[in-house]
Every structure is written in C-alpha cells, then in structure tokens.
Image (cartoon, rainbow, N blue to C red; front, side, top):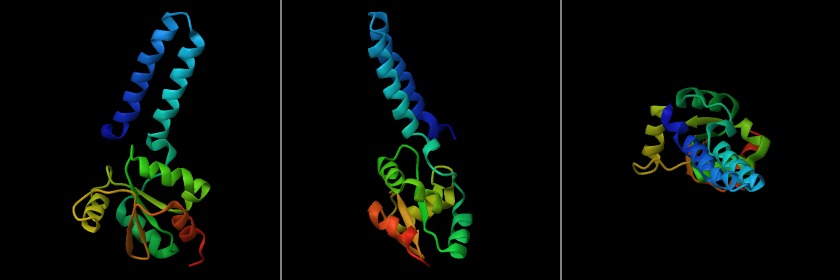
Length: 145
C-alpha cells in the first residue's frame, strides 16, 4: 500500500522544497505556481485518477459477464496515465486491476509478457494486448458485444 503513494508523496515534498525558495525571496506568485504544478503532477501520478481497482479474478468474472475489457495497471506508470486520460469517461466502463495490490493480476501480466510486469496490459475476450493504442481501446469499449 505504501509503495503506491511513494511517488506522489515525494513529488509533494519536492514541490514544497522548490516553492520555498521563491517564497523566501519575496516572489509568492512564482512559489505558488511551482507548488501548484507539483500538486497537479502528484495527483496525476496517484491512484486517485483511476477508477477503483478490483482483484484479477473478480475483474475477469465481470468481464466474462459484460464483455468489457480488463486493464492491468500500476500507479506511476506514464503509459497507464496516457491510456486513462485518453479514455476520458469511458475509462469507467473498463475493469481496472492494480498489479501492485493484486498478486494474481501481477502474475497474469508476467505470464503474458515474458516475465515482465509491462503495463498497461488489456485482456479483451481472453486475449492479452500489451500497451495498446488508446484509440483502439476506445473502440473496444464502444463496440457492441
């Protein structure tokens, strides 16, 4: 659990440190802008921007029932962030599995990626797709099953 928040917390600490200089030098606008930038970056790399994760077994069960893809991801992954942002509201229609919280999900990802925990990995109709194009994922979510 702590590993998930290490990056965002370090970004907040770095932001506070970077903003201190301008505040001390009498440039509060610059300090506030720096701090705000780091807060936004910390938020984007945190699990807060992703839909609630479920376990791999539950996600696969739900996917079998409704035909929606399963996304295996981890916090701090730039490619996962790109996918999440490019999907917009449609991201909520996918089943998300945080591989740092779910060992079965991490195992599945390692199994389809030659032992590597390469994310995002999508499971669509039982087939794995590693780091797919977000436009293709949007099509998978939009297409009728």
